[in-house]
Image 1: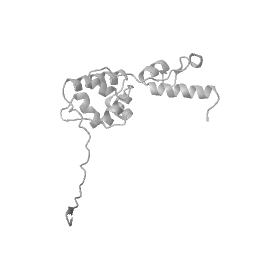
Image 2: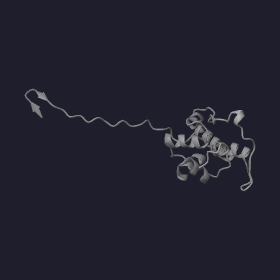
Image 3: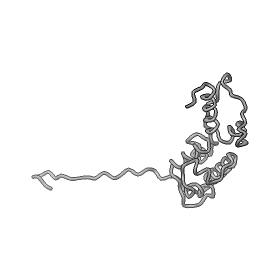
Image 4: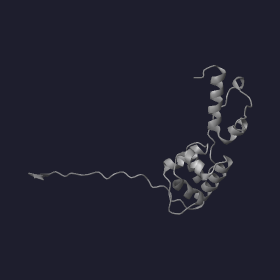
Amino acid sequence: MTHGMLQSVTMTPKPIRPKPARPANGPEWERLAEAMIARREELNLSQRAFVRRADISLSGYSPLETVKLGYTPSSKTLRQISTAMGWTKESCQLILDGKPPILAVIAEPEPSETIGTISLDAFGIDVAVLKQKDPEAYVMLVQMARRLALGHHR
């Protein structure tokens, strides 16, 4: 529309698009696949059990272990995988950058609060093994045992 000598122009800004992730091929993705497989096996988890733990789909995880070309996971998926592996959230990206993953730090009980080795006979699970294979479950078990010991059960 023209008003005398002035003309008004309506401009629509272009949407900002996130920088695309690197395509999932090449040696860095093979390195990530090897690290993920090794860690998943160390945790004694099948792919199905792992994706439940990571809260991602099998179709979103499996191509990463097999290094399928053309599949690029979101950064959110990589963070969920890192966390479920017991690594820090940025560890998958560190591996892609040629660096080792970083194990997430789980607070250990103070020496005076140590419960000791407990065997859950009904399930045949040694807590020391649980601590190694599923650190989050171990921490929950220690917290529950402390509450019971202090009489704070519900």
